[in-house]
Length: 369
Ligand code: OGA
Ligand code: NI
Image (cartoon, rainbow, N blue to C red; front, side, top):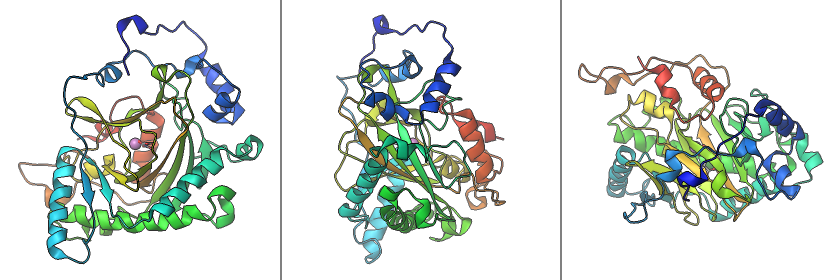
C-alpha cells in the first residue's frame, strides 16, 4: 500500500462524535454499511497519512518471514521437545510472533470455526442486532470497534467476542451459528495454550508448570473478527498497529491475508498458511517476563478481497474481577535486572487498555516503575 504526500488526507472539522453515535446506533457495524452498497468510505474511517503505512513500502529490500514451528512429537520425544524449545526461544526473543503447525487442532475444526464466525456476521441483521452491546461484563459481546469512542480512527472490522474461561457461557447464551463449535474449539485452544505456556516456561528456565500455576491460562476470550470487503482499502485500516493485552494470543487467519507484524522497523506480512495458527506474546507476558519477551506490534490492512475472517483467542481473564496481582517473575530478576513494572490485576490492565483504545502507544508504559 502506498500513500504519498499528495494523497495526504486533510479532514475538515466535523462532528465526529455524532457520526460515531449514528454508526453505533445502526447496530449492524461495518458490514451493515457495506450492505447498503457504499462505494466511498465514511470519514470516521479515514486514516491520517502515517509513517507506519508508508514503511510497508520498501520493495527493494528482501523481507524476512516470521518463523513457522512444527510441534509434532513434543510430548513423545524429549529430543524433539528440546529442539522445539530452542526454536520457540529464538522466535520469542526475536519476533515475539510465530506460526505453528501440527498443533493438534484439526483443520476441519478450524474450518468449522470460520464458518461459525461467517454464520454469525452474515445472518439476518435484525437477529444479529440483538447481540450488539458495549457492556464488557457480558459473556457474549458483538459490536464494531470495542474502542469506538476512544480511538482516533474507526476500524474496518466487526467483532463477536465470547468469554470462554473461567466461566463459560451456557450453550443457549451463545448465538446459534456458534453454539456447537465455539465451546469445542475453545477447549482445544485452552489445551494448546497450556502446551505453549509449558514450552515458554521451559524457555525461561522455569519449571514447565510455572506459567500455568501463575494462572496465565485461567481466562480465555475467543473473538471472531469479520473484515468486510472495503471499497477504498488504501484509505482505511482493518486493525491499526497495536499490541495484545493478553499473556499469549493464538490466532487463526483465513486465506485473504493482510496481517502484518512490525519487525526490525518494518511491517512484515504474516502469510496465511492453511491449517497453521499464529502465536504471539501479549503485554501481560511482557510484564511478567520483565521485557525478556516483547509484545510485538501488529495490524491488519483493509482489503478489497473480503470478507476476511479471523479468530483471535486471548489468554486473559480480561474484565472479570480477580484479585491476583501479576508482576515481574522473581526468578527472572536480579540486581542487574530489577523489576521494570509494578504489579497489576488483569482487570486493571484490561480496563486501562480498552479505555485508552488502539491509539498506537503501548499501554505497558502506564505500568512502568
Ligand atoms: C487482534 C488481532 C488479527 C487478525 O484481535 O488483536 O490482532 O488477523 N487480530 O484479526
Ligand atoms: Ni492483536
